Every structure is written in structure tokens, then in C-alpha cells.
Length: 142
Image (cartoon, rainbow, N blue to C red; front, side, top):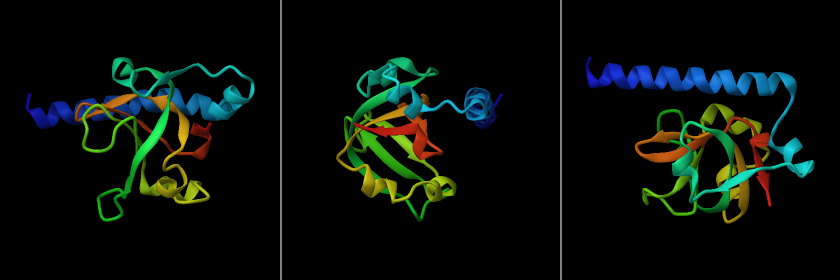
């Protein structure tokens, strides 16, 4: 099997796993904010995220570096926690361009320098742990 086919299979499986976890949460209305408001949030530090690949959890830390890659495919916004890009030990929050409209302010400006809690499935991208965020309800400010 070629490397490209293997990567495609991994991407498809990751998307299926994310959908299996996120869609039921959206249907039953649970999100990070309701957990936080009830004092039931269980979070790990952004320094620990690399040890929790494949887990759905909440990660907290300071957003130390941001970038809105408006010229890139998918127009991603990156919120880097613990370490700035390109440090391989960073934890990254990714917000795709199609989801930027869900945020009342540009995420790269609003969250920069803040301590946040972000909930979702931790997946690796080129060895860096990340959570893809589609809604502001997945992010809580401290």
C-alpha cells in the first residue's frame, strides 16, 4: 500500500472518529461551557496533550502564538498553546475558515495571550497534537 493511500485512510478514519464523538454531543446539547459552569471540568495541560492522542478531553494553557492563514487552503486559524510555532512541543487549536463565522470576533485576536480551555478530540498533525474547533462553545476563557 502506498504512503498516500495510508495517509488517506488515516484521515478518513480520524474524521469518522471525530464525527462519532462530536455529533452525539451536539445532539444532546453538552459542551465544554456546561461542564465548566457546573464545576465539573477535567482538563489536562497543553504540555501533557502529546500523551493523550486519540482521547476526547479538555486541554488548557496560554495562547502564546496565533496565525490566520487566509491564503492557505481551508483558511485555517491556528492558536498555539505552551510554545509558539514552529516548536514541535506546542499544542495547536485549529479553526477552519468555514467555521470562522461562528466566532463573534477574529479568534486569532480574541484569544491571543489568554488562558483557555479547549475541548475535543486530540489528533496528531505532523507530530503536533491538536484539536479542531468548530464552535466557540468548545473554548472557555479562564
